[in-house]
Length: 193
Image (tube, rainbow, N blue to C red; front, side):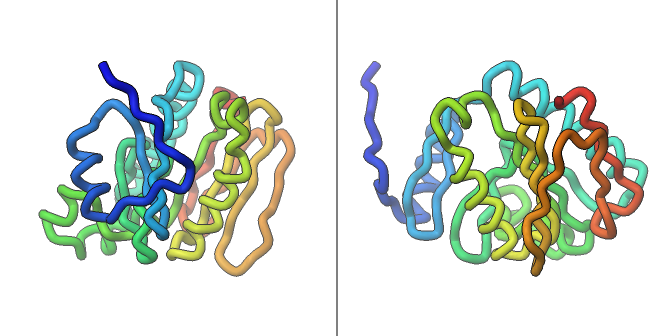
């Protein structure tokens, strides 16, 4: 099997990215608004387990609430700036999701989620990608996401991103509130920290 080294800053068109993403299902990829291809390693066991817990809690709330749809880390969204991003966990208001055609829902939806969670994994820390995740969170806000949580389990910190506000940093919170975006949703962090 041949390996390919992708140089930092390597660029592809959105169409090339879509073709590559369909053909290569073994790696996680994203595309920046400038066409830079970002290749990420598959999730390890610890991060995968924690991502699953996050998705499960949001899914359970969403099933009871009924006002939106939950997506896992394998869902690729095309943001308004053209970037293609896959948040670890995301949620979209049902009325916004239902405005998309079936074909748009089946492909890479051209919509920014209303809410996102990014979980800092051991490989993110090892590869010094924390600042990249912070920039990604800001990009989400710049493209219409109204609430985002960047969760760092090792340091037991959460960065809360809200439109038009400074980032709030919480140290060792036990729970997080969905605020007015996700009414009555409370994330229990005991299985994450």
